[in-house]
Picture 1 (tube, one colour):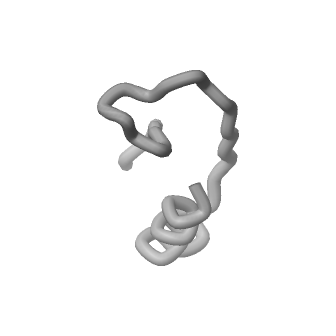
Picture 2: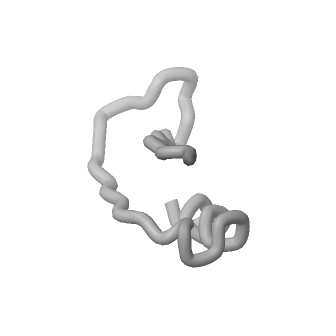
Picture 3: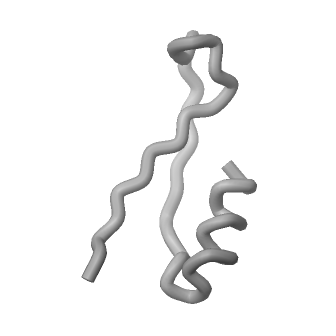
Length: 43
């Protein structure tokens, strides 16, 4: 999740600052180690 946060900061600068959360699950589809969801507002 740190990599995603850093990427958003590089791409969007101060506008890329965001809240995030992480939680454990037993399994993610397709054997993925992390799932990233993003909700964005575009003007």
